[in-house]
Image (cartoon, rainbow, N blue to C red; front, top):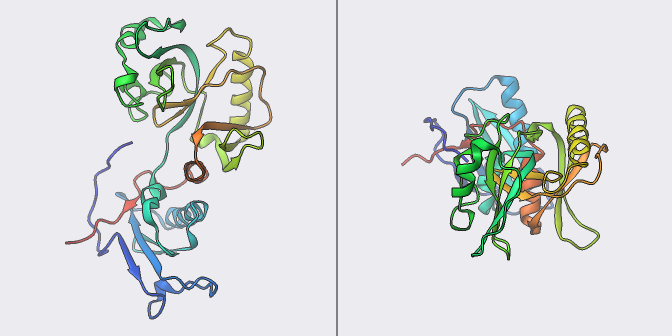
Length: 289
């Protein structure tokens, strides 16, 4: 994830507490929740048109609602979006503006980076990636350990390297992945659900018509291949969340992301993926001294 250049604004605070009495910004409009309201101000590095600002305001309100913030309301003034909620925002401030980079990529090769003896590589590592794949140490590095796995640096049309998002008992696996087949903009909606079969929290996705076609084509193509080429990597911010094997073409227009989520993590990711229209450079207003 990246750090865009910040611009100054006339707003005086990024986050402030205000009493529900005596301030219009604190008027909840919902008498059932009488908690003091928290107001957070956001802006962008580049000016937005009135239409774009209105869309951003609605997306910000919806994301706040999906994140579980109570009675969210958003107003705009001079390019600044002010979000008012009942109660605290807490650690969800970053989640309000972060745009996760979600990609679906076919697995080309995989190997576990555990203690010796080394795990043999399964699949075929493309020749241009072989030296970097051999040198990549996922066990001692962040999940997005290779520059090619960085969502800011990776070309969607190129093959890349990536690591597991979390350490596994057998060590952290590393992958060679094919070009992107689907991305976040191919998603129309997402929701956090508890798997009825007891495997924990998941994030359900619904695709656009174009995304549905691309997903069906990809899953149909890799389903007939040998492991690990029949696996589809779900890549979030450069790290592999999961890499399920595909048995047949998936044509229903949706998918499920698993990844050892707890309830808050699943709801946070679902909220971010369901609101992709937020401007990429939206950030909290820097408090003035």
